[in-house]
Length: 195
Image (spheres, rainbow, N blue to C red):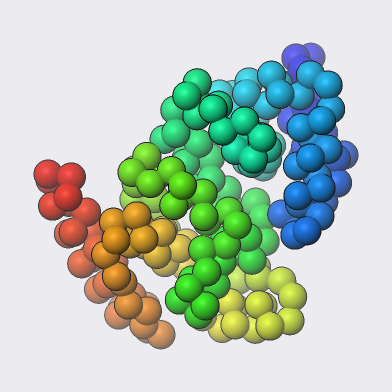
């Protein structure tokens, strides 16, 4: 078994501690990074599309926090695809992605799209067709607010895209209003990218 496959199994099993729950997440990231041999195995995980998204997401999180230069060795578009797949596949609680229009929060994981900027656009655009309702907020206030907003995966993608494009997008309670805003955003993105 390769070092990266063994590490993937440990990450998925939670052997290093609780991930995607703050502040424990930061401690877990530190433990993963400090385990001998893990830095190279983490980089191998980024490139291995056959490993679970949760493991690849954790690998990206650890590397972004400890060796930002890994983006010189791995395509930022692929890193963005890992985060997008994690969002769409419900691989974390929704709190990690933010409360969006409620308090203008991108969340700790959603903020990665801001960091990756243009490289995140293709992965986020792919999510604009996903109308799955995100109802996995946790906590008391966050769960009440987030679940009441009935955000869809496409709403998250549109919110992050709007930030990257520096094009304001309004929130609507009804899905038809949100979809109209998304259509306007797509038109702006198409003009910006010469389509």
